[in-house]
Amino acid sequence: MRRRQFLSLLGEAALAPLAPLLAYADPLDGCGVPAARDDGWAVAAMNEDVLVDRAALCGMADRLAASDANIHAVLVARGGKLVFERYFRGADEIPGRLYGRRAENVTFDADTLHDMKSVSKSVASLAVGIAIDRGLIRSINEPILSFFPELSDLRSPEKDRIRLSHALSMSMGLEWVEATPTTGDYKNDEARMHMAWDPCRYVLSRSVTAAAGQEFFYNTGALTLVSAIIRKATGRPLDEFARATLFDPMGITSAEWTRVRGDTDAGGGLRLRPRDMAKIGQLVLAGGRWNERQIVPKAWIETSTAAKIKGTDDMLYGYLWWLSSSPLKGREIHWAGALGRGGQSIRIVPELDLVVVVTAGYYQDYSPRAFQVQYGVFRDVLRGNLPPG
Image (cartoon, rainbow, N blue to C red; front, side):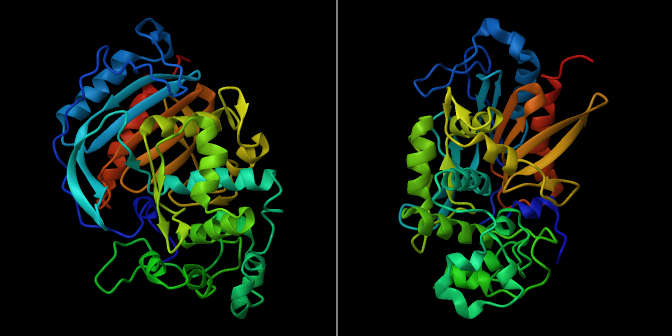
C-alpha cells in the first residue's frame, strides 16, 4: 500500500492494546506554572503571563483532566522560557523488568521518562547533522551501500542509487509494510526486521518499488540503516554518540535509548522526560543552540527542517522532520514537528517563538480520534498564544 493514513505512519510494531483511563490533573500551584529546576530551563513566573494565555491553557488542561483523554503531559515554551507545564494520570506501556512491556496506570510528573516512539527519528536527525559537521560522515549524498561493504551481494543498479539523503527523507523506494499492528504471523516489516539476524540486510534486501527519491514511503527500516551508519562512522552506537554530543551538552541526564542486536533503535527506542523533549524543540527553534551554546549546526537545522518531499495527509517531510501548517483565525501557522505513535509530539512554531510538547498513551489506537485529541491540544495552545491581527 503506497498511501497510508497519518495515524498509521506514526506506528511501529504494535503491542498489547491499552484502554484509555480517566485522567486527572496533577495539582500544581499557579495552574501550570513550571517549577524552577536545575536543568537549564528558564521558567516563567506567575507575573509573566504576557508570554502565554494561562487561563486558556488551564481551561484546556482542566477539560483534559475531567475527560477520558489519555494525555500524559502538556508543556509549552515561549520566548526561550518554559511557560506552562501540566501532568496527568493515565495508561501507559512500561518496559518490563526482564523483557517486553506491560500496561500500567501511571501518575506522570516532571521526572517520568516517556516513550518517544517515532520522535526518536527526529532526534537521530540531529545526531546525523553533528556527525556530518565533524567530518565523520562525508555527505548525505553518499550511497547507502557504500556504508555496508559486507552487503555488496545486494547491489543492483537501482539500489546503488539510494543515498543517505533518501533514508532521511523516507524515499528509498523499497518495499515496506508497517502501517498495521503486528499480527500473529508477523506481517509487519518492522517486526520482521527486529527479529532478523542482520536487520540492515533485511532492510536492504527488500524489493525496489520506486526510483530512489521519487516517492515518500514511510519506512522505520531506514532508521536501522541510519543507526548503523552513525556507529560505523563515529565508532560509537548512536545512543552513546548522542549522549556525548547532544544530550550531555543540553543537560539531558536521564535519557534511555534501547538497542536491538547491538545497534540503537533510532526508529522508536528513545525515552525522555517531557521537559527534555521541550529542550529538543527549543534547540531546533534556536537554530541548533541551547543556552548560548551551538550544539547542532544551524545549517543542518535549516536543511533538515526544509521540505524535501510531499508526505501524507497534505504534510511535507524534511530529513526526519514533519512539516505542516494549521489554519487559525484566518492565518496559516507553519510548524515543524517530531511526531510519534501514541500521541507523542514536539511541534516548533517559529513565527510565534513557540514550542509545544504533548505525550499520550494512544499506542494501539489507530482511529482518527487518537490523533484528533493530541492535535487538539496543539490547536488549543495556538489559540492561547496567537496575537490579534
